[in-house]
Image: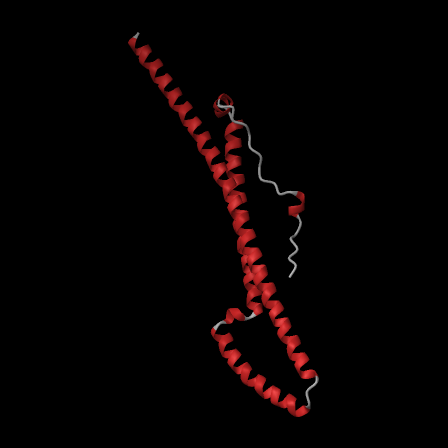
Length: 180
């Protein structure tokens, strides 16, 4: 009788440990899903912050270059030949100084701003994709646990339901138009 009692006690302890283990696994996956969901929000916030700031910088510098070119053209319109020659000499001297500054500070060139914007877009989108993949991976793990026996029993007792995978809204599936 005591051997049967020990066997039953061991079976009960194993079942309890198994129940606790599955319950904890479900709880950890739910926390991972919440964390991954938050990661998507972080990546979306980063995308908004970085891209709006970078687009403003690129637009501002492009506008500055455009204004500079138009001012130069306007200045030359009413000049005589000798005035143009003097202006060219003055601009060449100024250009030498600007070139030295531009070489020391290459970020002052608008093409660099455009390149930086492109890199920022790619980096930001990669972070966002990674966050979405992490979310979907965690949802997949939880959903698999919920639908497979015997863990489905524990999930049912805890009233844990399947989670939806991340799916982009229809409008967000379209390519983003960046208007510079």
